[in-house]
Length: 246
Image (cartoon, rainbow, N blue to C red; front, side):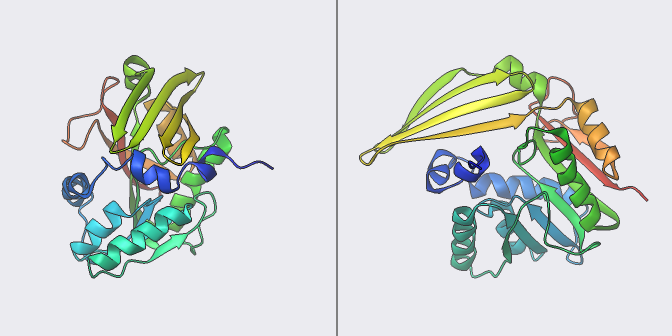
């Protein structure tokens, strides 16, 4: 079976394409998460789809217990390198978010940041991710999902753009295909051209709440950005905080 887009796109070029997502932003976002989720040093935190570990490392620097999981071995190697440079030891685990390699009731908090949801074409697979979050959370455990806001994406989508980072050209094409927002990324440098694809299933707020509830999770509050503005259909993001249903 051919690889899915998320098995191809999160490699060395991803680190270049998304280098604007930096540690300064992670510091600001973690500041907000500390307040929203009332995080403490007693909490065991899972950074689900941790990527290069920006948030995991920032949380660890604050003295919190955090473990990061991701499917990309390239990004996990980068995360380990960055943690080492900071003099930190953060467990970074290779795994699939649909089948987490943890026993039940392993964590007090699960974080899912930077649109790391909706990767699968079928609702059942995306629901399975949430069911796994519910399974590994302890009684009354908290979760935070930072997802795209469908209406805002549809209304503000930029069809094409290009930028240059030193001698590397990055061309991006974006379009809507039914319930999916799609992106084609071409990276061109002296070594030639590489092409990557992204395809994320979009959900309305009501649909997300239904998926969460069906998975044993209870939405409690929603924000539209990391500044703390209340969520609306026109918000920049869809950020949902909740707990395990008991």
